[in-house]
Image (tube, rainbow, N blue to C red; front, side, top):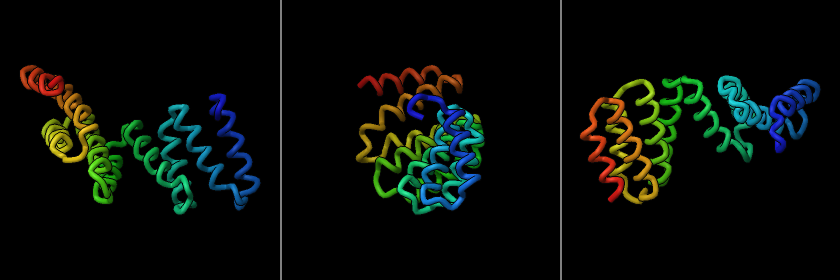
Length: 166
């Protein structure tokens, strides 16, 4: 994995898991297998591997990281409805404004990818209005400006970029 030989590492982990499915390090190897697929940009395969990992090892130390990678894998593989559901769940579980803002940004990205312009706009605006998420406001404004460009509203895009510069 460190040498970016993802196919080889994934294959080795898979062979070991087939031979020793109950090994004490099976969780680590399942996570490795999923991470290799993710880094190789095989997002559909990564999503399946992360699902297996989370189903078999829900209490593993890397479960939170696996869930984030699963959600991103769903987004990258264009499974927008499933990704939106996952991000909505993260939003409900969020304990901090930052976590809420990150989930909202992802929900906005899903809506924008599906050309649900109004929904994406409202979602990005929610991020911009959240208190205690100052570091994510610029990202929300940038995405909002890009969204306005895609919607064919250059005046709104310009005003949003002006807000971003301020």
